Length: 305
Image (cartoon, rainbow, N blue to C red; front, side, top):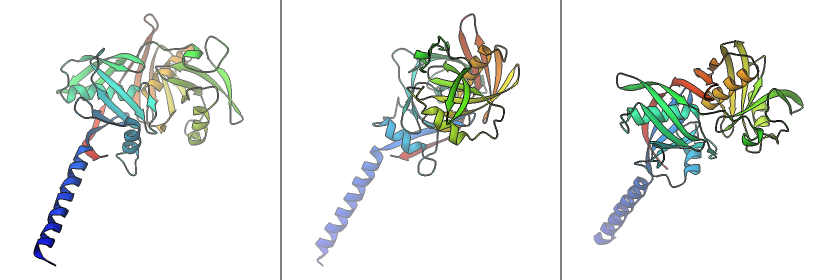
């Protein structure tokens, strides 16, 4: 084979590889893996990064075998009405209105990574603007207190199909078994159900049955709860679009509100989740729910999409 022909082949191969590298670089995404009580998400600073297809990206990065592994994707965006916007997607690519553990991590991210110097910020979500206060130790956010807003109890606004003005201790038949639920929205829908045996609960079976029940037009997050005393409850959660997770901040708030409505606890409640504890307070004078808990960085990385 002539030398010129070989030289041309080598140059074409080299140019092709350079082109492949350029294409890969175009879809390289920097991310931070964070978790609040084990409720883990992939966080992307979209003040710098751009995601063309968030639902597809959420499904890919959430895969625990072939992706990064998470309960979903949270994009930190600029906002015209708040300090930042939290755009959130579940592991199945569906959009979610709000996540209590997720928003605490957003707060830690924007402070620890230098996007703000303020210790009180506002964050735009599909569930409205939320306000965060930071406890800072040695230059890093240790705890985040979130003003979660007012609980929504009107069935049509949760939404839950019901006849009354509220859904409190109301019977619901799921897979042939009658449970009693209390309906609360903390920007996303929750059904709170009390059980005696949390450890023996077959949540992989009953969770999807609740999530897709006909009484929940937008599907539902379901909290299974055991009351320990007037100040403490324990819960497991099945999150729509993600399955069982280690923790759910909005779910813990919904549980506290439901317990208070049912006369089972005081207005300040420690909610014990698989991933740890959250402190929830319902201030009835202002009708505001406050959630306080930790947020942690797991690692930073880059991924080719």
